[in-house]
Length: 200
Ligand SMILES: Cc1cc2nc3c(=O)[nH]c(=O)nc-3n(C[C@H](O)[C@H](O)[C@H](O)COP(=O)(O)O)c2cc1C
Image (cartoon, rainbow, N blue to C red):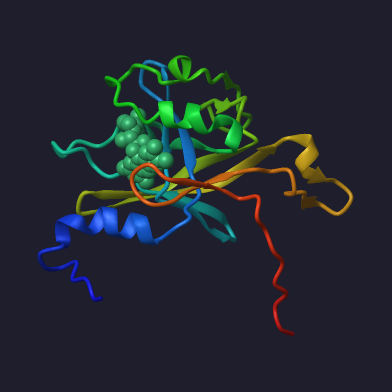
């Protein structure tokens, strides 16, 4: 089967690609509105893209009326955001944050999530997230109705149990992040792991 995304299937591009390019990590992005309200929203068009400097990117699509989502608007305002990673324990709270609330109304209380201070940015991270990446906006690309927000990671917060200070490595065995699967409602766990060593 060959699908032409430049032809009559163009309008199906989102469900087709979002169901095929899986699993995707989920960034539960916190950002600050002009009045200091903490906004939280999940984005699965998200990944880490490099290490020198350490960069991540996520892509909020514009709303139907062409206006940017609150997260994109806030990042444009103060050039900062925090990527909170999503494990099984906060999966439902993450989903609650996807509700469309009026600009300036926080998703946090409704989702049962707690903001806690970051160290290098003004935007709070989430206490319940197993990992949080404090980011400074490097730039935002505008490609059609997509915005691709690129950020440089300034600080990483992770639970003590996930860090081996001697080897300076992450211990990920108990880090149960979830992934996004077929659009719109499917997810996966990441408990079934296997090792594959690279050839010399
Ligand atoms: C798991 C998940 C992943 C999502 N990924 C994206 C995404 O990558 N891009 C996007 O524009 N919306 C995505 N959404 C929808 C947004 O989270 C939703 O539009 C949200 O209300 C935006 O909030 P904001 O206006 O506060 O930024 C996703 C929703 C869920 C539940």
